[in-house]
Length: 225
Image (cartoon, rainbow, N blue to C red; front, side):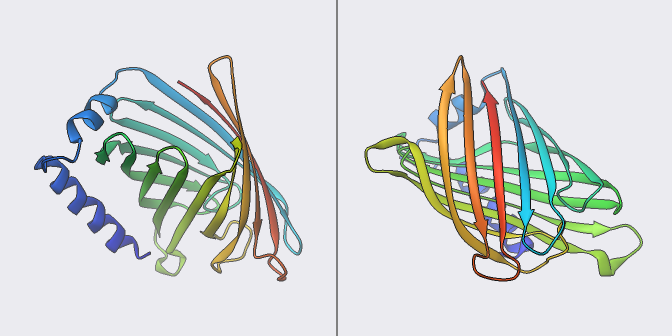
């Protein structure tokens, strides 16, 4: 997905949503986004590569109504951090069955590489059974156009039959922290458990299986609401 096309799509959907098309359930989605309470999420992704350096990628997010804040480390590059500010808004909601939300963001990147990055996060949820999400950013390196790069991470998953806490699906990603800038795909499986008001997810990804770039990624995510 081209970054300009993705941002144009978000803008177009936002305009359609603001016009309040009949039957789109926009008022229900808006009321949910306007809740004034903090939601937090912490995740860490451990990359175990076959022919590259292993590393961890921790991420932290905080949401308060429409406001989205985020911090990442070892995502754009190793020994590099980034901080983000974004705006949450519902694209549409149909009878509380199909929900699509989007968050355009702007980030600052610092460390081994330095620059700015416009980005986005889009999530679609169909009856809590099928989920799709995509996040991307276009990094503009300060003083060095050759360092510009488009990062993306997309997931498509579904609940397994008779297993309401296990999801399986596919992941497609393009990053370069490990030194590989190719698009990689692979299967994923996720176990989800709720404990004392916290949602805990354990996810395993297998990127580029069977190739020299094959990498296992083990993720742990804790969400509080």
